Amino acid sequence: MSNVNTDILIWRRGDAYPANWPEWLKAADIEWCQIEITKSGRVMWYDGVWYDGVWGNGAWHDGEWHDGVWYDGVWYNGIWHGGHWLDGEWHDGEWHDGEWFRGAWYDGIWHDGDWHAGTWRNGEWFDGVWYYGAWFGGEWRDGTWRNGEWFDGVWYNGVWANGIWRDGEWRDGEWHGGKWYDAGEWRPDGPPRRR
Image 1 (cartoon, rainbow, N blue to C red):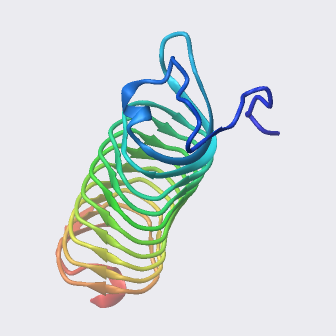
Image 2 (image 1 turned 30 degrees about the horizontal axis):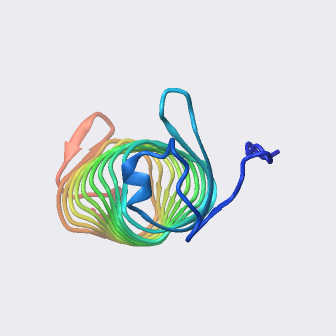
């Protein structure tokens, strides 16, 4: 079931801007979109193609994001191709490249990019560099972990450079440093089978 109100008109590049659009939305490079502005002024993006610009705040329900800066808001679904995520909540969708600086990731698929800080709750990580943050669940398929805290989840492969491992399942990969919590003790030598 779709959340999109089918009575909402589709805006296309070249159309006049609706009077209730905020300036940051008018300044963005948008191919087309289906949005509404709430009485409080919040942008509700239901579908469309965003090429570049600065996202101020609101809710993104579906569509394609190609580049730009996301300042804050809630992402429910869609495809992210690149840009800078500064803060907000990610609930589902596919991330293909870009830089994540902070916020909360609840579910979805991460293909590539740089994670600088934030909280990961669930989803699948396929590749990229994790610099710092807290991982609470999901599947790590491959990539490089520089630092942070791992609380739970399944690690399939990749490079662990440093950080704290509290719980979860380690299947394969390279352990280079950090602390591993095992049977009530902190160990510096990593997963049990490395000993």
